[in-house]
Image 1 (cartoon, rainbow, N blue to C red):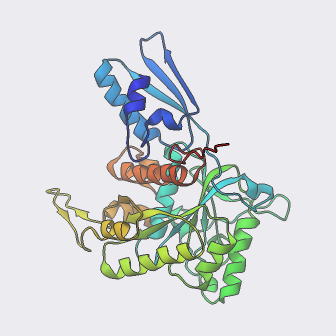
Image 2 (tube, rainbow, N blue to C red):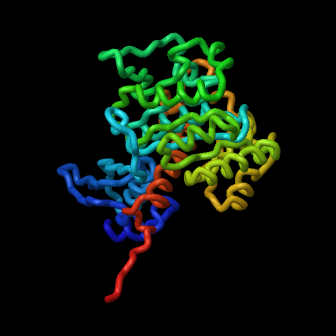
Length: 351
């Protein structure tokens, strides 16, 4: 068993599964099944379930993995009070609007939860907040127990805060830059966040002053860029990568949304907006392609009605795509930036 977990390698386990585990225990129960208990530093339940199926076929014995998640902060944070409950802040950004960034951010948040993490989402798109609609909370308003901190709204276990919960979305469109930045800082710092492994920030599209200010003032651990395969979208996405480079925020990788359309009748894959654009961009920017998502009417319909495939069917085809990308984000955050990563070089000193 331990040999298999040591030898198994993937993008998120480049040195084997056990190289990232702080605890490993194998139990044989009375039903002659094997339960493997692991303590892991990032959510990876889906991948370990796949490994369990492979082992079960090989050993002809039922095998399950029980995970305890032990996520650490990869960046020192200046947040205090309830904000100190947030371990890692990840910015979900795009160079331009209309690429499905907010829908992707919400589904990734649900996907991280499906993998076992405690997650929140903060809507930084002050001018066009869409998180309330995507979560089915359009008419909801936050409460406050002490008159100082707002309680986040909760949708299916996901803690959320958005300017859309506080003011009419049409009012936000007339704000000047400093007002928008100030409002966002209040949303972050005056929300009573519960303990979170990850807080996803749905960034406003573009690379202007507001985006730079947010990236500089918030202790963002890393960023993810959402794009479509179109050339015009890729040009703007490249500007997004450059913006985060400028403010010294690591970019974990690229998500190519609306990558292809799969025909419901024959299964033919059509690349309506171009092909392999995200792949080429990831290579040119020396970052990872975290995943490709299809142009699918179910995703659009779920978004319009505040639903998510991750909640309705966490093992469906679309849900599995999001969960794989979520694992890649969490895994690469640990592997690239955490000192406990097996990829972190060991420094030896000689007398």
